[in-house]
Length: 259
Image (cartoon, rainbow, N blue to C red):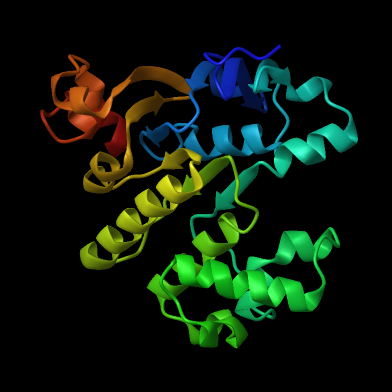
């Protein structure tokens, strides 16, 4: 029986290598229901790979991924599909299908799984567009007719189309100006509150991190090197973290970047 204190998502000893080069190394992560956790770290530190492993897009070499205490590797095909329906994903570049109108992009998964007819999917898409501050007229537009900020909103609408329990956000404000970034971050906070969702994000904008995160996890060369409340970022005592968020220079980090 699931305990109320059981993490919604728990990752233990997760590792993945490519051509014998470690990309993730013994990563542990526990996320409670309703929590907003943001992953930070240099490019290539393993953040996006970790999300892809959780989502089942890339197989792990070792480790366990549990949702509500259930090992995802031990699930049947039908059970795994049900578990994945509990996830919503906003990709870094929105990843909208150019040839499909906005409403079909938003409801792509329920349409593919034949859980909705086209009329029902269109109605659902209009409802989700309203959640991200866009009108019904946007539903019939193509992605090429949208601004960058509108594409992000449509991507977010697609991510929440199934009212997910766990929402994954990969650089939700990448490429946006500071004003639109704040709009998107505030929108994420509101939607998460409305849905009661748990969120795992990747974000390189520290102002955005401080705006949406309850907890921050830093990865470096595939390892978790810091995990703590957002309020503790500036007093972490971790030199690599302090250098990453701009509190102090760190020669080894600077040399590694230069190389």
